[in-house]
Length: 145
Image 1 (cartoon, rainbow, N blue to C red):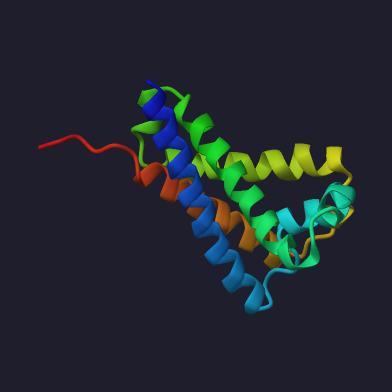
Image 2: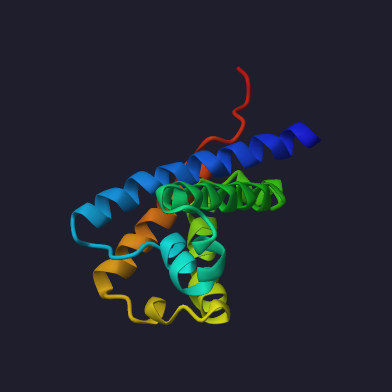
């Protein structure tokens, strides 16, 4: 049982790493300003992040994002198997995580700039959460033939 959750955490980490690539592309293309992990560091937990040396901050923020992704993988694993077997389950889960951040976490942390997102930024974040869910759902255990 424990190895199933470790595998789920690994899947979530890999899915979050995929989001990093998507966000890098969106940022370099001018479609996305600050990504949520950076926004949390800047607005939601600035004292915590200033304790990290300047040269390590980006890496620490990314590692925290991957850890959050691992937690999402474990949460996905707790969903009923009948739901997880559906092809759309991963992307739907990714969208639910995005909505939970946008409607719950961001207001609680006082992330004012999350409310000021442009349409292209919102689309970029929806797409990268769909990617997270797609990767999460598609790396599930396959039946042996």
